[in-house]
Image 1: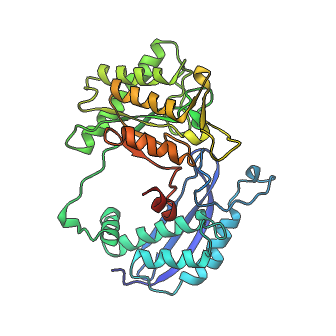
Image 2: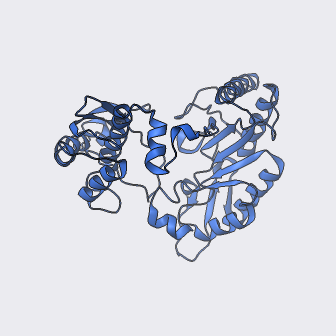
Image 3: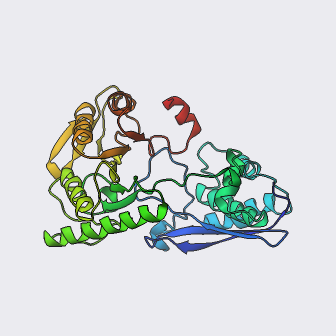
Length: 342
């Protein structure tokens, strides 16, 4: 339980890894503990995601400046937080949500609320002499640090496509999951070795090894399946065992592939430009089904468009007991949509 009041809140405009403006916030507690956090924004974002507050001034950063969000933090948010004691994370977050007063955080902007929330979490963890992960565990599930935690298995994005890379694959991310190791250190090593083996494979085949927005390679491939084949080869040549200690995941970002429907009751269609093919939901699920049977594919993210509920139901029915199905653009951390999905 945090016992220090908030002494100061401030923010500034910085650049993210893509060179786009984003917000960095500081929260300082009365005992001197300081938390700092900056937030990213995605290249492809779902329509249901919490909204950012951008300046819209074409003379600065093409309209993507965040001085309005910075100003919001230094005025409205600072005014309600400074001098108050927030004993837990939920209370602080709820105070900002109520101040915003919208369902999608469009008034204050998610890019104003989130960095302050994370900065407060870091300041509180420092104040309580806890690591950040143990502070979050205490706040949200009551797990104490001495009860032990399981570190999540990393997923390395090694081929970028879609909106993350021009003229690469249709699908946005192809990831490798080093899942059969006892320590994170071993998983990290496996991911790095597979990444460098993939680079060599691409070079040997005369493909570019430039990287996309998220650090994965962005080669021009003849189809999406080729990405899986080359990752499979990279796993094997690195000395690991596909389907045993290393697996594959994909983020399709299918909303970006969807062809607009004239009727809400019509089928959803997806344009796979790399193979000059248009597939309906059923046939796209069939592609996933084939891949799950042939490759060590254990996770599919955003395999259907965010509004293709029937497609999601059919995909879950056919593949849900065989792979991890992830809804990112589908749910966008929106509790009301999560309830609908359940």
